[in-house]
Length: 320
Image 1 (spheres, rainbow, N blue to C red):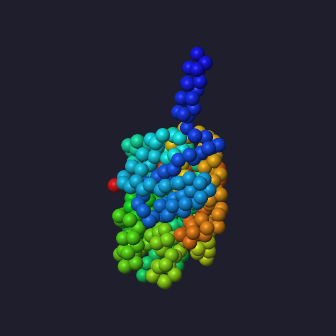
Image 2 (cartoon, rainbow, N blue to C red):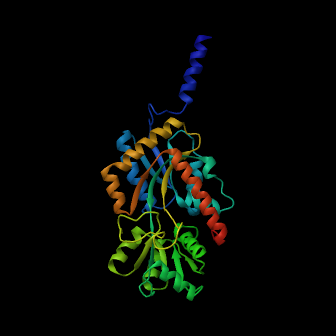
Image 3 (cartoon, helix red, strand yellow):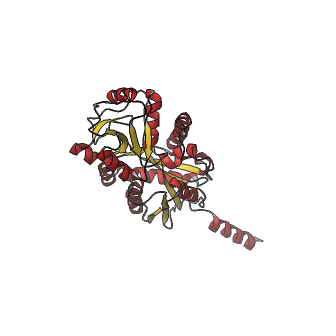
């Protein structure tokens, strides 16, 4: 009987997931539900390199594209909850898509355990120089004079750039026309050529054109000013109280990953984010290292889900 009990105990020990005392004992996969080279991919690679150094174990970025990020996100949600598959989620995959897509096979709150918000990132409201405006108030005035004539672009339906425009239209009481593209690059090309009048563009795609004078910047969308363009006011400062669009990324794990593994990951990711090499690299990409506890990130995700669901309902925006 004693021998039998020893055998059962050994079997159970082998079947149990690794805990923080020895985690990780094998490579960890960090899923990115987007193509190589974008902001979320760059962020994941910077963090994974530092985590590999801190843990003395490989953290491998795995790009799983398709379905506006839903395919890779769903696969991560269904992974074994042992801490060896993580997801670098985004405002789009975790907060916006649940309001746009009616038949998602995952639930952000139910199926994921928050680890840490990794970065915050602003979009910049930019206009083509041919548009006779110098401020947000000027742009709103022109839009009221020319209802339904101002065109703005975004990388695709349901992105933060798209919904920022819908939020502006709703809050300012103006009528705008959204033109979706297949990526930020073609949208920027049309803006530079004057086929679009304005965009809520990412810092990385717009900054060089702002500095060269090919685009005129009016404001940033985050609640605080950007270190890269500190001279630009926030949308709130520019006269739009309550307007905030934070193009954030954050690390999550499948639900039911042991709490001590979540705590270990949170602690080490925060160390990575505070390291000079990661921080400097992120700032150069227009990203602001975030941090915080899993509980804080969980509460933030819930607030973002509610916020964007409201915007989507009010605007009638769809994924198509």
